Length: 212
Image (cartoon, one colour):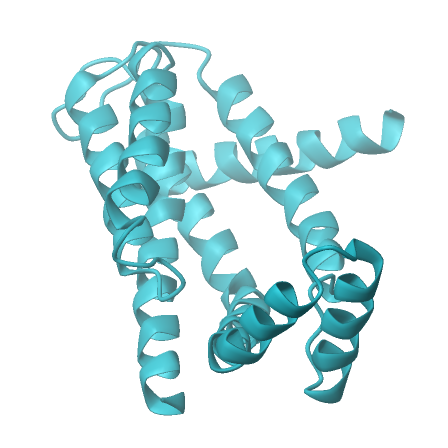
């Protein structure tokens, strides 16, 4: 617990220093810190996204064979699982990839720590762009963040046409509900991070297009 507190303290000091450098503008400090963190992690998150996209593409090509296995062994679930696993192994497909879990373990503390530091940094009323007080919710910012989340889900290459609407609306709605009631400073953190996430979705989409 002490180590985590020191980590959040370090991020808070970083935010405060950035705020001073930007003439006391905490909103700009939050945006810069969040954007920088997300950009720094982009090479790593892109590799994970590319691996996931490659797996989805491979599964798409194997769809006819997987369908035949399901029909052939529909009354024998154990054999169905064995034949499916054998087919996956033959084509180097790993549905459960340890690197994905490692990625979550690496990213989660960074984002949660920065989130905590942002909330701690909102100790007094401050302005940013049209936002009059970063301590209070801002409806327009919440809508912008929700729109970015929805757009990012829409352009994701793993999103099928049948599920595209649901995959876009649900996360966007959850984001809107969350940010509608929370400090705008946190919304700026979310917006900056999501902006990089949207760029990543476009990059992965182009990568998948080249593979096809």
